[in-house]
Length: 142
Image 1 (cartoon, helix red, strand yellow):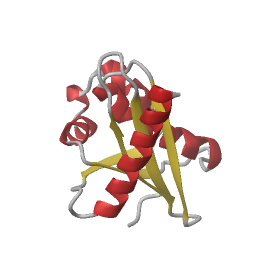
Image 2: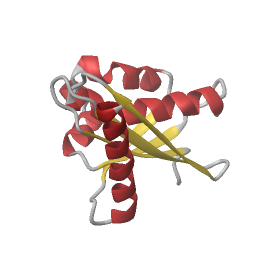
Image 3: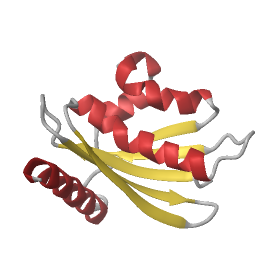
Image 4: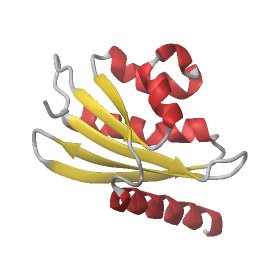
């Protein structure tokens, strides 16, 4: 069974005091719509930045697609082993970083995590990295 929402996300560039670019590529099964969300945040750590694309995707889905009583299935794909490990086991999560995602789990979202290799789908990971780096450059030099 296909998930109601597929999210491929990630972040780059986070360090103490520096900006982090993030991007999420979404596919909504019911409408066959695909889209890209992206942004940049200042002064975040990598753990925080890694969560941002998935939170943004879930917020968008909740605001535009969710209906009361739904229990959407969401497949979150990332190239970060730490994200997948924490996604599967709540006990391993940094609560501050994951609080926003847990709101959706508490609303009934069935979130699954998948570790994706950049080698398996290099085009989408290269595009995602390009978008994130452009955002960081714009913020750093703008």
